[in-house]
Length: 594
Image (cartoon, rainbow, N blue to C red; front, top):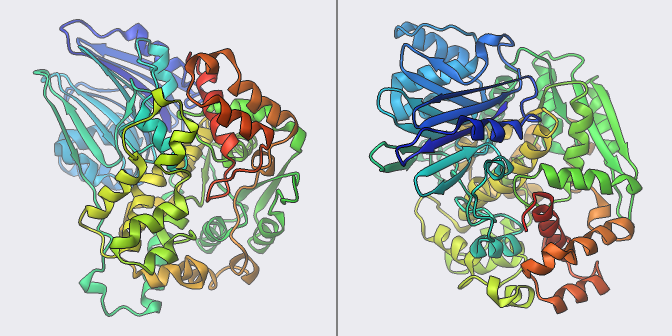
């Protein structure tokens, strides 16, 4: 797990390695253990390393392979790197390190742009070909590892974080109106390739992009799992599905123990993370380090779920750590969490993950986390309504449950100069409904949430907050083989028992019943959903700051009305609408965007 940066000059000049090193330096939190840079002609790479696999200097990056003429930088972890190494050695490749980074470069040497098909893991990669001058960028199937790109005339820059690109300079920091509409409508999700800034894009998940010296750019998506029934599994019973998913998830959890340092678990006390702990215990893990976080109750909302996480920790005899946070302590970590965001994210879970990661990083460098199960296995409340309608009503059903605002609502919030044409979020979902590869309306909803919402909300949140402390988070529910299998599972098995029914039945085999038959929980931070005191003051300050006044994103009368009654307007997902506006301005100001 690391941070990468790079530059490609397309105007005949040499790449500026000093600029790339400046970009990489902003990511020292992501890679506190080592750093390096490399340049050749029009291309330069920078890297910050977090040592997880092959702790020696042999795996420092950039990886320069003089035999193949390739140089690469890599962020992530390839869980099957040992098997790939054996395959590549059998094909004549020789290795100078024992890590996964070199395996990625050698895999490209062997299979070209199809190398991604052989990788099981999370990754963002940049590879330069010495002999042709081509630059190749690639991102993992579920977008677990980020990769941001800024393109200008004659120049391409890329990095693991958006602030790293800002450090390189010459970025158009104007607000992208379509992205802004998504942010305010699609529950802060901005689908790729856009970001909130007009001058920054992100490489979509499951994508390989090739920049050629003649100016051409080739791009293809290499993974599109079908969300439809597989005829070969048509006769499977409920028990068959449980067995298959359990076997696949067990493999996913096993894969994510690959490391040359200890691996722990973020334990919320919910079904998903508890199941990860249980499966590891069944595989013989003893003394597993687990971590839970809780906050003071605010406005009648409880702020911890320790009763459940304690139950799991006791059942499996883990080395458990409770982290308690008082409500009055939230403003400083909120500021730090906003500074750590590559893009503005409204979820109050960000602060919880930031604080949790801060403590966990004092003990470990790697943890497994339960993110993704709700999107993969139908755990959200909008899936049953989608299952009850045809495609002709799916758009309205999804929008009613998930969207924060429609086009009319955006017009109430935004100054006319910042309004996008049409209704971007609604048009985006409509396009998904029109695509092939999903059988029912609920399959379309699951596909959107798996390939878009999950990537640019929960997964990005976990990556940003953990890496702010040099902590690598691994997500077994996003193992691509598990996702492929779950996508073909009949929706009625996923939606049973109030959601994630098939996973609950798996859980009954290994977990205490109290963890399974309980209301759905979150990482609760009630102070950020019920705004008052210092937190409310901070939001007010952000919205009335000089930069916010100059930017003029929001209508004055709308902001004033929200501030008069800060907890009155909530989104369908119970988010605070005032917080949504304030967070955006806090993020822009935190990153020096005027």
